Image 1 (cartoon, rainbow, N blue to C red):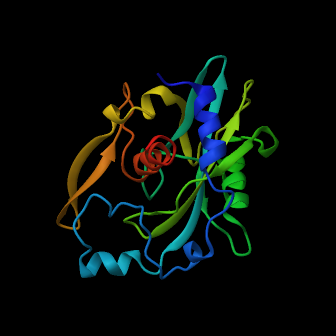
Image 2: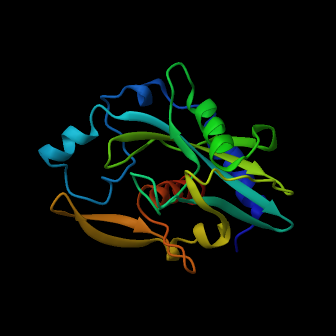
Image 3: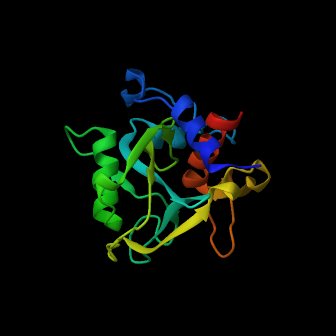
Length: 213
């Protein structure tokens, strides 16, 4: 049975405080990413993957009494890239900025989550997206009351999904769609009317693997 206290203990014990230096080499290949469930990359895909552009996201865990929830966003419909998709707060890492600093800055800019409200638990494995980003995920804990002010130019909605659901491998579905003419598989975790999929679901899967397998 899932327990928030057990989850937090596992996170503090098993997540690293920082990433290995090799993870920051834009030409290096990552183990985790959109390519995990798929055949070797085609030549066209390889050109997209390297060199990868660095980005960071914050995965905020909301503790409410005896339950825990993962805070997620729905990207604004008017955005050019990935509009309407479920995502963590995050974005590109600016020059001279650490992934942690970028994740905290983006969370503050996108949803108004003040960095002093966040207790950092650790870092997940870097994740390579099929759109050419090398994402550095940071796991943090926040406690109510939450006073969020989403930037409507970037975020249409902010919502919570039970960690009990997301940390259950029975809910980790494998879906498929065409990308650049090729069938590509990816993780999906549909919850109620929310379709959590792609890189976001892949990073949640990585969190599960780091803590429970």
